[in-house]
Structure formats: C-alpha cells, structure tokens
Amino acid sequence: MSNRNTFIRATFKGPDTLIVFGKIVYGEVELSHGYAYHANGTLQRAEIVMLDEDPVLLNFDETGRPLG
Image (tube, rainbow, N blue to C red; front, side, top):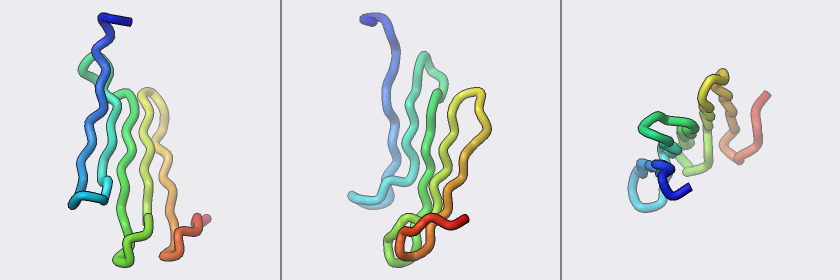
C-alpha cells in the first residue's frame, strides 16, 4: 500500500457548502459526488458517479425529503 497514489479532491462554494467530491486513484477519478442546493440551503440534487457504472441521480425537495 505504500505505493498507492490515492487522494481526495473537493470543491466548496464558501466555507461550508460542498459542491464536488472526487476520489482520485492513479490519476483517474474512481468515484465522484456532485451536489446542488435549494435557495434555503438544503440539498436539492446529488449525482454519484463510480468508475464503469451508470451515474446515480438523487433529487430532494426543499425540506430534504427524497423525490421519486
């Protein structure tokens, strides 16, 4: 494991709002999450992408409850 080249990269909007999170392994994105928020700050949408899999899109109402 001492040769494994893995790190986490994250982008924030302001100090407390995570927009994108990615796990980088040997220079390739292995896993990523992207987030969008309602005007009131609650999570509106989460997109989860894993290597070699279809993206998963989760949607939430303004109270944070999952849609559909």
